[in-house]
Length: 226
Image 1: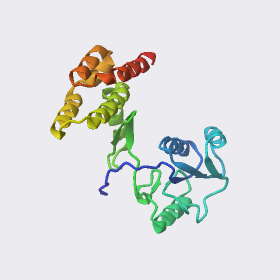
Image 2 (image 1 turned 135 degrees about the vertical axis):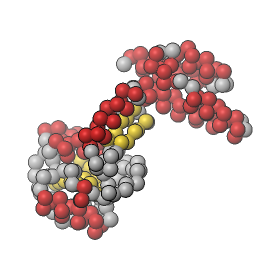
Image 3 (image 1 turned 120 degrees about the vertical axis):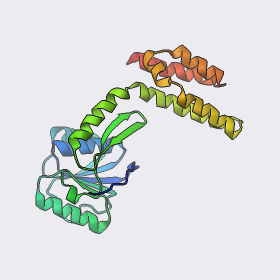
Image 4 (image 1 turned 90 degrees about the vertical axis):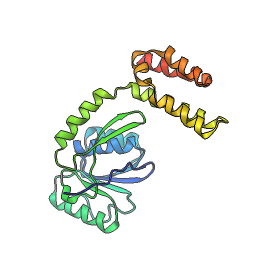
């Protein structure tokens, strides 16, 4: 059994190569674009969705099968192709160049695995079973999606502003920590979910952060408009 080291990668403006152009490759490309990566696709054909993305996004498309040196300059590579020969060659090149590689559904050709993910704005929860059962990982993800609703998107936007404001104040380290812990322990997600915005405003005022109430009103409007 392989022990994996959990990590979140910063892919912004990093070249990521996707080998393949089918539905699985499409999902991988969409997630890479969401992370701000520069994407190169290597495949003779791509899905209609990928064709549209190639026309509208800064995506490089090599309209042919994979060939050696396609990974040159890559930060990360994902192979979503059904060709066993291509899978082995991609992994071999990636290993030689020291590039993290994931060959979909082929753990023996993976230097990293892609977890099942729950995302609510800045909140990202990654679930992995170490390859034992992707189906179980999906079940756990579905359960977590019901526990962590869209209110967490607004919650973390507010917490970011609270943290910035508290750290900018001329307070002792102990008082700053106390305030941050107060907001972290308060049931703010429940307030947001139930739209008890007056309680939020009261807590901000009590902790000397009344200047954030206008920001809260903006976030509340976003929540009401959804």
